[in-house]
Image (cartoon, rainbow, N blue to C red; front, side):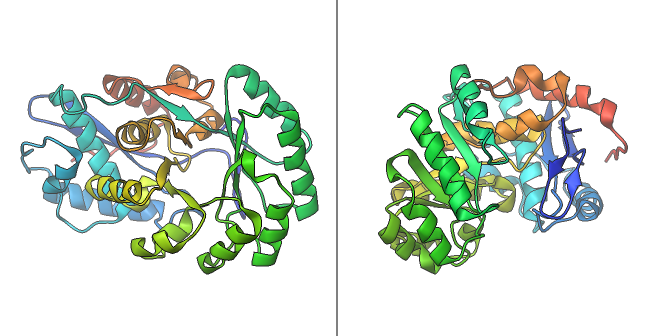
Length: 346
């Protein structure tokens, strides 16, 4: 359940349907993964996950775990074509199983990552909310823009910049809602030094070079990243970051390859959880700690939207997230079973 209804484009959700995957080895060790499509956001449906996942697991359940020493070898475990969101859930479960069975498998993983604060909706009460969170220790804020008249949103953002310390950075997300002209008008109205980037300011990425040349504000890609060739990224001036939603990539091995390539291009990855439960978000956070630069703030503040007292000790606080042990995932899984409506044992 959510603390209050989560507003999507055409509907509001009072609760989130979550599919949790629990793998158990012959030795009794367990690994946990999550497969959770979100309506209006993911191209996969709950029925697809419910129907396809058991079929795949029945084919795969007798496979032996090879000697995996790094993330780049996880592909050895799964060569059957399957929807990316299901593949990521399976790879996550395997990762947590391997982490519990081999103490050195994730050695060196940072016990803490940085997290941005999501403040929504954008209105004249936003300043008070941000000042409260600054007092708690948050330094990076994500704001949704493109929902109100440009002049109104611009005035709010300028007020936030004026009334907060210079150490505070803002990430703006337009979800490709502006025309090129609107995006440029908005960008020109803001001081660029406090805007870390604007995510997806326009629908067509071909207009991004003009946006940057006119405004000087860096950009980040989310949806567009999956629609263009990686080789084209180096030809987008002002491109600073790529928003990574692992369930759209699927394979953790491929995810590691992509992030390494981004780093070679001078870009950084910002991991983002699409309102996954604490189980799936913790697994993504470990990947963020392993693969992304340690100073980058990631998008896991959506966890604060859930009404789950059982997970309060495990969620991000004050702009940082002290990652729990993998053993805590199994404990959390057991606590969440009180919300369970269905179970399939394979």
